[in-house]
Picture 1 (cartoon, rainbow, N blue to C red):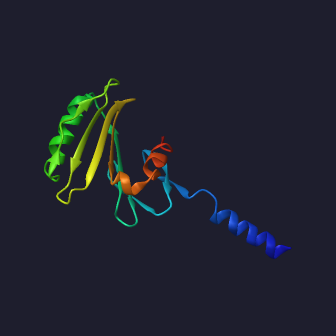
Picture 2: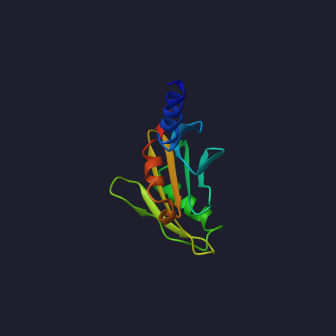
Length: 144
């Protein structure tokens, strides 16, 4: 009886949610199984273990800077390391999106908004390889 209870407990853990909560400082987010989290200053990076996809989330004080000014500055910075970067386009809610392609042809999509006094930048790379993991992880963000 004890053995079957122990086996049931192990199986429940194995087949339970394939994500774990990770504290990135400014927020927490569930990280999908097969992805590795890291932090670099205000930027959280979650990379798929096979290096086919990644998600980065940056949350930093806006300090009165507009979303447009942040988008322009980030696009100029990304132009230094990407082969091509599109101009940011403004959405109806005042957020901005743009696309980037690296020298190997890998595409990234960036989205930026200024909300609640913070600049929030999300960069998604390898969306095809990520399946629905990136969308699921983004849906679990809880700001502190």
